[in-house]
Image (tube, rainbow, N blue to C red):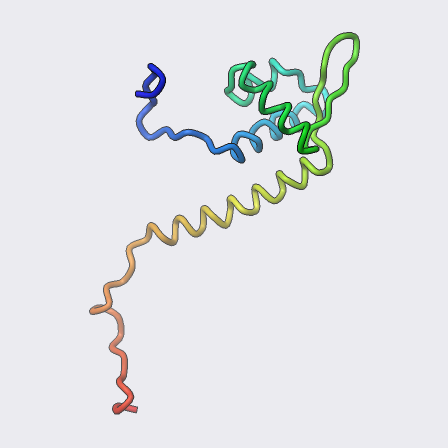
Length: 120
């Protein structure tokens, strides 16, 4: 139990990079017309927490904002797209490495016998 709430079994807290990637993907889906509430629903985050993350993404140059008729819309910048490309590439590597590490390794006794120097 954390902060009075329980977590679903098997769920884990999202890392900041995972959150940033999720937010950027949701914004990207809306093609420059993403509003904070829509992004909140898509990212599964409360608006107050999302505003902090969005402001950080703007500071980093990964998101841009534009105001029209009193409404703020967000869009992914070229740098934000570069972050997403790199994030997905690295995630693929990490997933492959994780699967490789999870596979049971062959027991040394089952492996082919090694020759000693005097057997060569």
